[in-house]
Image (cartoon, rainbow, N blue to C red):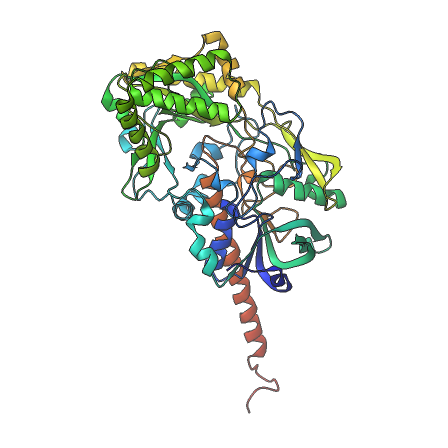
Length: 556
């Protein structure tokens, strides 16, 4: 239920900070298990992007890192109002220590997370039934198909709004900003949080605290705490804020399928649950190890319709994409304008055909709600998108700067870097896919640049800041990690972190689905542990009160 600041006078089992997809998932799962849960967020009921100088971090070098206004949002639902909605599982190989991927390896296996994907999909409105991602007959191929699904309701708060409003164990307070964590170094626990809410200052008290305010937000709170207690988190040279990762994403090639049937296998489809899915190419673990490839996935798209398309619908798609580039202030030269108006003139020469095509596009986009306008191309040639792993590096990091915000907390600076290995590995994966497609007579790749320019082409598209992975990574000891296998902060007994910042490696997957699965797992762990302690306390009390032989309570 939604509450006002008076609720801060109560004591809770768990306080969850951050009402994005991960925080909502953790809070709902905790409340379902009978835990009195407080969910707070700095933003309003409808999430919003930050205004300039409104957030607690700044970009020192924006070459590879997008601005905060496009990578952050506060309020109920967080960035899920604006994200693409892709839901992809991690892979077993992501959890392995690989000698060609520095700092790789999780302290848990994938099997510890995979049982929670189903509940995570339900929370994200991305249920796909019992359909398998990879068929048994493909298990030995170099490029088995993996499957991605898309949320039916993009905003996680909207997908769960009835339960958020009606749950008796969940209290949601918005416009409530965490100012600081109050830490007791003797007990090794957080005993309260300082909150600023609608012009007032308050304290929140709970048995456990879960930080789910995105990777940079979590990191900033801990770094400010470390200023007061320098011994925490491995000290100033420890892992906190290091190993900042995202993904490499973009397009450097087109894929031309040899037959319509091959193309159809990889285009968007709808499952029995109504969820849109598509199959993707992904190098098998044995091929990744043999060629020392990053984990990466590829899928066809026609989001980039070309100039001079003969098909009216594709011409309209070209016009739409060109308009979007102009609206988002992309570089638009005289040649771009000339092509745009040339295509517009040709479309308007056949208004009946253009109207029919436009209605078809609208039907795909809004009636069918497909993630992209996936038009079937007569030439079977599509753009090939990729989404690949970024290698962990301690030099890619977030740290505090000397500037403070209105609450007296120091702001965050980031230094986000890719390695040459990232660009080289992405290219090698494309070349391996091209060889495999030709060997199987499935198709071929047509690269957008000369071979010697492809790595530079990959580097030019490499930009993240959305996924915020690795900043509070999971591990086994405080010198190399911030949280343990149960997402508890190693140095603080009752503080937990939920979100992709605990990932030890980024993998090929968009991080939201596995991050929500980890949040569901964390909620189950906290509820189970609380029940165990309650049972133990009850048994202890019963034992003390039970009559003992020879005691004053014994009967003669």
